[in-house]
Length: 421
Image 1 (tube, rainbow, N blue to C red):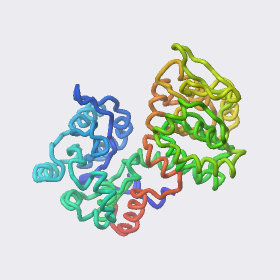
Image 2: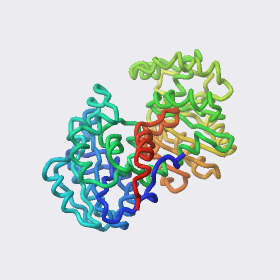
Image 3: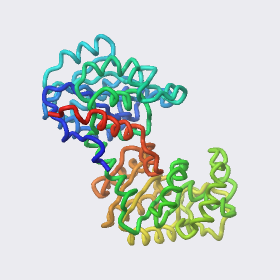
């Protein structure tokens, strides 16, 4: 699949001004002015280092927060400092995106220089509301201020922002219209890892879906079930509870009120439809756990409802799910089984994560909370791949061609006769 998109192997970067679009969007502590997690920055280092070693004149672009994440909305100067520390090499920073100061710095770069521009979301055209309200085509986005000002100064565009590949914004899909383009190493790895699940997964394939953001699960389930990609879907978290309610099981007022408060009742009909068509593939919990007086208590499905908040799957379910995982050749995980941040309700998540990590199967895990649990249990090196892209990952697995993938493919065709040396 990647043959239709250029990679870093397709260009000679020596002396070439290269725009590298990253997704370094990180949790931010605005009280102490520091990044709370640098997982995405660490994941971007191999591409940055490779382009540095190839003597590119490197210009880094990324976003941090924005109109939907205003609490994380800040300058990318912190990111430049972290990159410099991780690389052990100087990274210049300019508090400008595409104005005269930024353009002058780009013009003065020499081979091996690395320059970080400020937060691209400081440009109105990079905000989510701009994207969702105007719905500009890539051709129109190539004419926006940020692209039209920076593209003439560059020779090559590289996108290593797979986590943002589901977004259609100027710095993500506009540069491909004007410059020979490639995907970076992180993008390449994420694209290949997810393609392996969708295109030709080794069977049996088990999906472990949980968490609180169940719209992601409902986005991908129709595709992976209808196309016979998933052999079993092991449900947990609020997803399992929605399925239980759709099946007519009373889980208890406390848990149901949370589902209604989150407006997840909109998924009841879809859950009923999925159960009626794929009842043999949707595996529901046999028991659950809740917390009473600070202690973990388990209850069988048959003994529901309870007047406590369901916070985890129970031991019988854990045993069943571990057995299914042990038989799998491909495992995909998105969403924890319970409230893993608390010791009383982390057992389901911990046991499933350990089982998948220690399996000989090809295992991919993704999503923000899922990765947090991976880090908590020090399992990053045990999974075949840990995907940094939440929204992009879900849309990819739902069968949608991501805007950035489409733009990179179009650029490869448009500039195929351009000399790459």
